[in-house]
Length: 268
Length: 179
Ligand SMILES: Nc1nc2c(ncn2[C@@H]2O[C@H](COP(=O)(O)OP(=O)(O)O)[C@@H](O)[C@H]2O)c(=O)[nH]1
Ligand SMILES: [Mg+2]
Image (cartoon, rainbow over all chains, first blue to last red; front, side):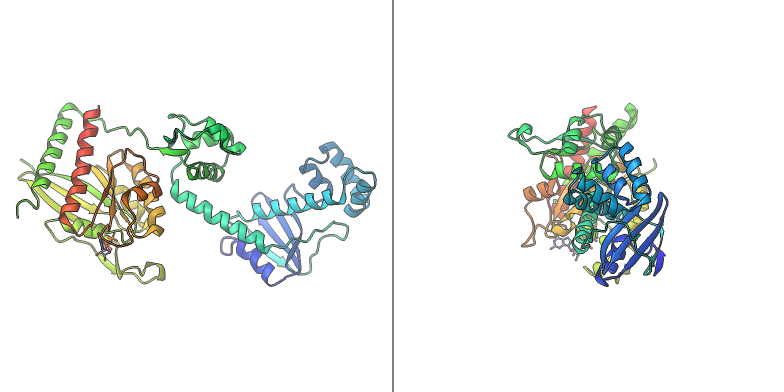
């Protein structure tokens, strides 16, 4: 099974693998590096993506459970033995529980799937023979629900793109005097965006300042609009600059059209 | 003296009533190149406008108003931009009885507004249908500012169409007074 994500989307691919309960590894060439997603009976068991190589040391470092430096020496240890051995050692020494390890690996896998789901192109191939190295700790994840959630999000994102086609527009607060900002349960990103709402700040400027992607900022604004808190500030339109003469002509035209329209219907 | 022409644009989602709107007030038959559309989703009505609707109202000896209806599908966006150039203002039509098109209407409104800094009004069309949403509800659904005029409309009624256009013209005058 080979192809390109251009023609067969990541979610289609994942759902195919899941539904047909495939075993093997999906290898994808992406512009930011290669990815490997390994499956057993349709369940995702292992993932490696660019720097996030799927090794226990790197997963724990990314999860903030250990420092980069610790990760360095732990991966040397794992290279000599295996991730399974390393995990066992960490548990025995009381650094971490088994549950923590499983959780971290799960989180890593889901993050990989989420980012994979957004890829628009890249050559892929499914190799039924390839399995993760024997020493890796594998945590099987059922993808069906994940895929549904991702599709839902993607649908929402494309709807948001329709609702907010341009980011070159400012935001403003709605006139809702009875809403107390302090009593609303907003998340961090929502607060951050609210702080930047000013007539001169376009959505794009806010996104740049807060280091958010177009998609992220649309989501935040989508939920702020949903809550009835903000509106797109419909640009202080800058009326065309007309000379006094042109303006007079335009005014006279408009008045004539009004008079003419008013007479329609009345004439018959 | 040379005859002057001015134009206004009528936009809105597929099947919102643009052709009907222009037809109701135009003194000529609305010229639109129609072709049959056959995909599933587009079988809402038998034909759709792929060229543009085009209506005319003679104002007096040396002024003609043209009304252009936008082609109903987003893939003809480039034509919208051309249409938007130099327009006096625009009308956004919404089929009040088809909430599934409200999102598209919002999107069209945003897109058009970005093309040109002209005044516009929103017409809640097909108010004669039983399941038409009330204007106030539509305003909330479309997230329209209070400042934006939203008018009830039945596009087959010349009186309604006339009223929508007049409101747009009043807005244009008002805006000219502002600066
Ligand atoms: N009941 C009712 N039908 C309308 C109204 N306006 C348009 N229609 C009908 O809605 C359909 C679509 O109208 P049309 O003008 O072709 O839509 P367009 O795609 O926006 O040009 C046609 O069958 C019209 O006759 C209205 O105000 N009330
Ligand atoms: Mg039409």
